[in-house]
Length: 220
Image (cartoon, rainbow, N blue to C red; front, side, top):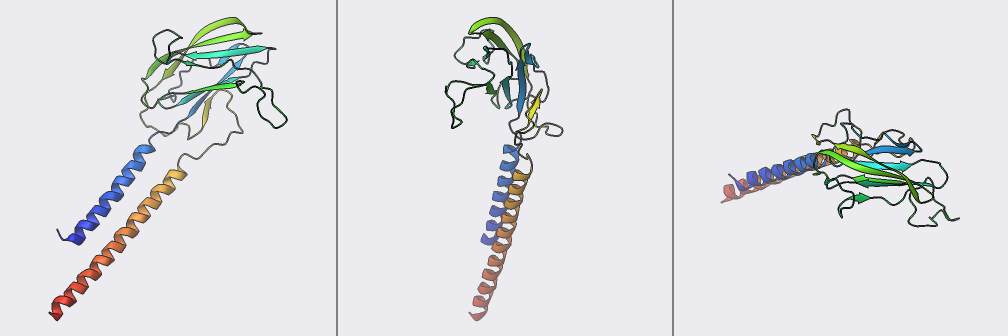
C-alpha cells in the first residue's frame, strides 16, 4: 500500500475510534431519584422503579416540619444486613431548614436538609436496605428499614429520564435540567466534520505530491 493511502487509512481509523469512544462514554448519565421525607416517613418508602439503575443517585429531602424533628439515613451498601460497616453510607442528622447568616452562608457547617448517595456504575444490582431513623429533640422516636432496588443498566435510554433529571415523588420543578443529547451530539458532529476536513486535506496533499512526483519523473 502506498504511503499516502496508509496515511488516509490511519486518519479514518482514528476518527472511528474517537466516535466509538464518544458512544461508549455517553451510554449512561447519572439520574437522581427523589425521596421526600414528611412526618409520616419517606415517600416513597421503597424504591422499586425499574429506571433506577447502576450509576444513579438517590436524594432524601427532609420536609418534615415537626418542631425539632430530624432524620438520619443509613444505607447498607455492602449488603451484609448490618448498618455499622465502614463502607455503609450514613447521613448526618437532617433537618427541615438550616439557619443562615446575613451573607447566606450556613451558621452551622454541618447542618443539612438533604442527603445524596450515588451508586457506582458497576454496583451489584439487587436490593439494598436502608435504615430510617426519626428523632425529636435529638431523641430517636422510631427506626424503620426500607428497600432500594437497583437494576442493571442495560443502556436503554428511550423513555428514561435525561441527564440531571429528578424522578420520583416531589421533584423540584425549578431545578436546572441539562439536555442529555445536544452537547454530545454537537461534539460528535464536530469530530466527524474535523475528520472529514482532515481526510479531504490530506487527500489533496497526497494528490499534489503525486503530481509533483510525476513532473519530476517526466523531467528526468
